[in-house]
Length: 232
Length: 381
Picture 1 (cartoon, rainbow over the protein chains, first blue to last red):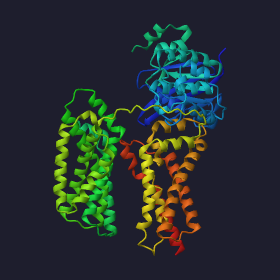
Picture 2 (picture 1 turned 90 degrees about the vertical axis):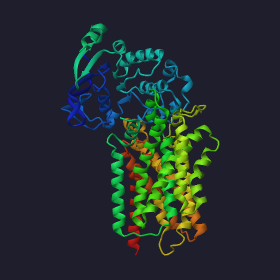
Picture 3 (picture 1 turned 135 degrees about the vertical axis):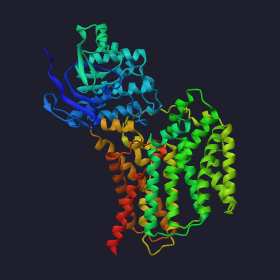
Picture 4 (picture 1 turned 180 degrees about the vertical axis):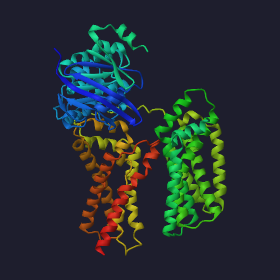
């Protein structure tokens, strides 16, 4: 049986300059408790879509926008508290340590400080929890935001290129986390690595020319046939 | 496209739009001041000193900024001609400094006082000299760090103070520029590129997550921000002396907006697009970010204005409790307006740290507060 709908976007247009929309006629349906991988060439609009859902971009129009079946806007307080985004590149909060950032983020979501010992161990991050974020390497910095994301358990988790910069072991651990996130909510994540998406997601969406042009159910499709379908 | 154009475009925009905008601003400012009929007697020496000091500070800031390293990184990754790269970078930075920053200062000086052609040319020469010598000293300091701070602060204005005789200024500037060019022709291009400094990481074991703590650390760990705040405290001690001569005018309150001009602290979001993005992506930030930020700015403003009031009491006397209340009000008002400006209109698309620091937006809050003082004084009359 299909899970109830979590997020529904119909006929969306997003632009930086009005004449050249990045996404046009874009529609997306995310069910509750599923993992959805988004794949597309460079410049297809994956990051723009993520940033729009996160409420950062203003230049968009759509026919309908539903969250848990009710109309909403991306900047509604209730929606903001139900989603968390990990950006592809993020050097924010350089003067916080990981623990301080986690406390700040948890308080922003009106949550008590979560226990992250398992996540810290899984990402092999024990040595860096009390170091300023400005002193961390790109990969370790990514782990800060990934651990926070999985610790907060939002209903919708947006991960933009989450594997970039991670070492091999951390990437494998991340795949486990994404696969297991269904018990908490929905993950929408973008990646250029087809294998990572095939390993973790229930559905794969292909973003081309501003729209979702192809959709695959992962367990019914082999990676090679997806690769074949992606060839121009 | 040659290297000079490539670097200048990255500093000023693809169509050199920063240059045209700044020159237009300078021209409008010149016309406005000239038409307003404001006339002052300014000694040529002050013009030369101001041109030199201002150009040195902007050039140094640009040389120290991360943006230059970002620009040069790609150029240093491919085979390059050392002399060509050094001269292209130095000339592009000098062009950027003189046309986008010093030109505005010149427009004010040229509008309010009468100058002859030789004085104008000497002022321009002082600007060029300041840029070239700053670049040479910067590269020299990278080699010998021991005396760098003292040298860069005292060297150029020191020479100007020592020579004093105005006729020798152009000759000294020419000689200094020639010396700088000679040094630059042998300088290593890699010294323009900043390597990240590896420091032993400090561990903070408390997990409070207070944004006030974050801001305190932001101030404490940024040398430039601390220096700027210390500079404002020094100005707070000096201003009562400057305002001493005009006893008829209520000048005390005019010092409040001037001393709240703490640009680096008031550009927290503008200076870090990643922080702005993350703050806007988290819920409830009006309370969790804006409130502590406003409190922090108010506290810094209050500290500086307290120094100002104490200095005024020692030098001029007659400070009342209402003056302290007024200072507190201005400190809070300035902080509130600065946070609102930063939240709703952050500065975007700046090319260098110097461009961010000298963005005209920083004058909006002091001008509003000055207008408020003038309005209150008119009401009192």
